[in-house]
Image 1: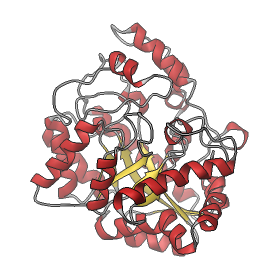
Image 2: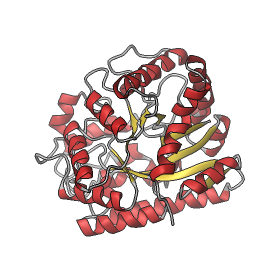
Image 3: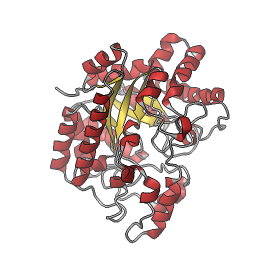
Image 4: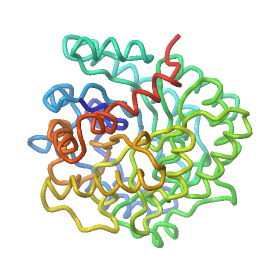
Length: 383
């Protein structure tokens, strides 16, 4: 069984005017028409790779792929790329409601499919759903820009999201929005060019809003996800966590190891620090990041080779297999995915391949055990 640390289940549920990112980004970005051109190119990558080029993260595909649960990513691309504001504008309060509405949509959809799936708002509910043979769906959030416009609002919204079962929050994402500095994450744009087109602001990794978010997440036992952060922001996040007097586990939900030069991928130092803090690192299924610095996979077997390289690097840096997980990022605008790992129906084959390369015990750790241990030990979920 696989428990996917990062999968975009809500993406295919969004209203057409929100999900059709390609049409949406044709609108000009105020004062920055050249950025709009970049986004038009990016939008061409926003395609599903499920059967028939449809959504790859559905309940039926998860059942087919022996996926026991998915941490379901709440993300509003139309808010992050807010075309009514200039690039780098600070968050707006209205973004919070966008996520609340998306949570309602997911919960309503899962309730209507109750024989096959169930929402899990805390560790015990997740266990109950999986034990019943259904697919567990757990809320998580991508993008700290969606938490509020000031420190007080961020603290209140993090608590409210925690009360609704959110397990983790990724503070950085594709563009700088006044919360956390982010690493380049547009596959078609080299890191050096990204930094010119979409520059980071300030000299610290987290702004006061970002620091407030980290503190609120600690207060409410919501896991901090350092994916998408640049090295400065990751280091700053660890510092703020230590200042709270707590040392909670930290995750990188959908990432690759820095086997090449890509700033998006985790440095060896960050891998060691996550391991020391008892967290997990979800290996991503995106070919661009997973194969960066490696030979591109031309077959499923070669895709498993790529994933195996990241497993081995995490093991090398942490000295253990306890910090490895699967965080596919499927339906998260990652086309092309690794060959043979394009949708949730492929996960059973991936699990079997890992069993054949290691053994059933270790493969179970990678596929579900390590992540479930972290959730059981830290995630508060709904009271």
